[in-house]
Image (cartoon, rainbow, N blue to C red):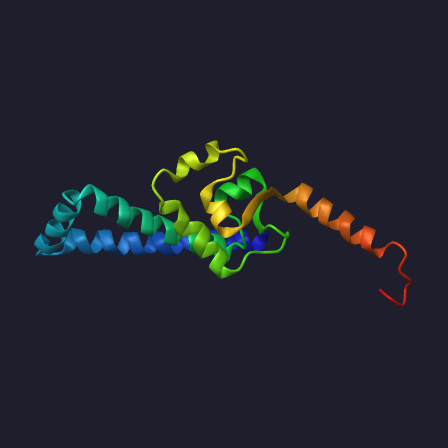
Length: 155
């Protein structure tokens, strides 16, 4: 758990430092017209392109966070949940990639209104979000059941 907290603190410090350096550079730049032109063009971008770029950046951030924290994000730490595959194993990098980029699909937020209440990002990547405590308890009881009837030599 300390590793995860340290990772989150280090990421926050890194990105805070990058933003601070950028703001300082922008403040002291003698010729800031290039930056101003960039921000002006960014404000007047095509709405479809804006959604595509924003979705891609957010999907990448979500993918990196979920991959580094092994199926958990800040929200999943708060709710004490994590992402697992259908068979209960940890997803691969490709599964996290599928899960993250399928969120860009238009109207994906409404996919929870279906029969099983599972979002497209979960059904496309064959993942589930599970409660960590209940999942670990069930996994432990399953392994204990498999040990019943085995001799010490088999274990």
